[in-house]
Image 1 (cartoon, one colour):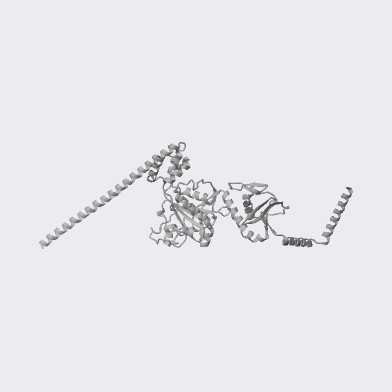
Image 2 (cartoon, rainbow, N blue to C red):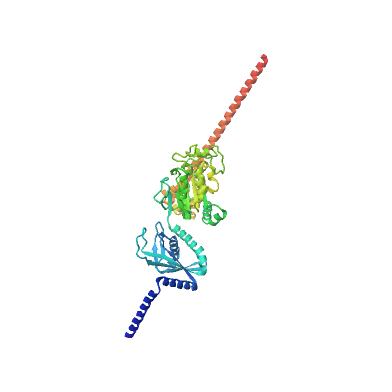
Length: 511
């Protein structure tokens, strides 16, 4: 045993002497070149190539690292051996991640990719304007050399898109407003945001199911239509006009659209915008995958109908100088002044001009209670592509309200009772908001709520029929008065003619 340890000591001494001699004979530059040459030889014979994706790229955060981490979290919970759990800001779910030196295998279009997560201690830092984390984190991607072109051209783009989809799905929706007017925050952003928690969905929205399915299909085609819009040379945007009486669910419709697509909402308050240039800046600061909303556009600012004001109507893009002076506060010399000088031309350029193409995948939604007050230029296709009339509550919408507020299905209510509802609902002309209030008030007693709602509908229908009868009587009375007036005028005219004839005959006799 003693001889064994003696031999080992001799071998270690020879190794140390050889290492010292190697360092003395071969300078560091030569050793570095030798190692580099050996690595090249190894790479020539190896069928794999490796890519490192670090968390910090210089002093900036590597977006690709965050995207890979989020993408792998969708499968790490199944195949990973040791997982880390995180929850990002404004996120509604937890994210799984790979721990140190854990590996995962992913497949893309039949090609296998090996991912390894590495965490190493960073060397002590010198003075830096931005201190770096103590640990160096990153991913190592291992692929076969023959698949290098496809992986770099398609796979990484797929990971970025998938990560954005997961992030948008997990993250809370945000509701933005320009309540500060034209002022900017410390980062130069004119928008303020709060988490958007509106629970409205298309399942709970009380409207005609046929119209609902048509709108959902149109939204789905828009969200999946990037290649279509690129092929046709159109900006990736779409406009919707929601019009109808108050209380018909226009705001709930917007919330349902945002929840369905996973888009943020920008609620644009036109009264807080002073000039057209501020309006363009607000548009430039909106993000893709968002809904830009202008509610009650007929009441926001004075946008006169050019057709009614005597100007040329139709699909003309710009307004005349006279219209611009009438719409805003613009002097004849073209200088803007006053509290609000947004012009109709500026709003048209906002929705369909060159500046509207500075982003992609955005939806413009206008709401109004009086569509007849809007200029036809705002309503044409390309600005408001789809006009959706939000009508009074129909029978199909009533069934949705019963299910939402009382938990009743159609077959759970008496057939005779449902026939009464079906016969009276259209005549009553009650909005979903009015019906919802009746159901909420009596939600503790469901049967009482149904009966009270039926009574309210009948009362409203009777009132509407009386108003119709009164209108008919007034029209008949006006027609009768007009007929009487015409007869009196005709009789008076006949008397005047007879008097003239008599005077003429007397004059002839005297002559």
